[in-house]
Length: 170
Ligand SMILES: NC(=O)c1ccc[n+]([C@@H]2O[C@H](COP(=O)([O-])OP(=O)(O)OC[C@H]3O[C@@H](n4cnc5c(N)ncnc54)[C@H](OP(=O)(O)O)[C@@H]3O)[C@@H](O)[C@H]2O)c1
Image 1: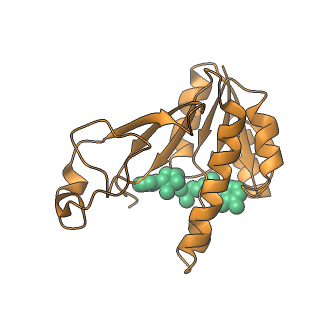
Image 2: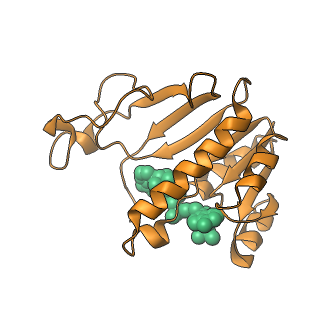
């Protein structure tokens, strides 16, 4: 498969990339810096220079591949006080990718956090945050089974799978 990744140089991306390459997939990764581009090249990934904000670039490449894995997130600005800005950027990227993949059988895979989702059942995009304190901080969240969210990015959106992991960075 031709697979496009955002965030291929990140923590999750650097684990996903070797598996894709070893499985024989044709992998292209978005890189916003020379450092990231060099890491991707060394890992056997075709480099697409650009930023998460280059929505036309995201749309173009999404139209040319068999599936997209979206792992980029602006943790730099999120952790320096602008989480809302990072989240809005993420939303715009997901919407840009989703609008191209909509109506196709080409998947869009994303990763996010588990807190706020009800454990023990398949979640959908219609779910909001679960007010149950059992899944919030100090509750059952971190030890709960990984809920898998399946859905579409809108009524005619692409097949979307989101495996939500709890933060585990050492
Ligand atoms: N790790 C976890 O335990 C965990 C838990 C819950 C949810 N998640 C979610 O999973 C996703 C990936 O997490 P991660 O831990 O792999 O994150 P990460 O290590 O911070 O990697 C983020 C990736 O996004 C790229 N990126 C950041 N800003 C960008 C921009 N403006 N343009 C293009 N690329 C940009 C980074 O590129 P550079 O290499 O250039 O910095 C890097 O490749 C995120 O949505 C995160 O919220 C992760």
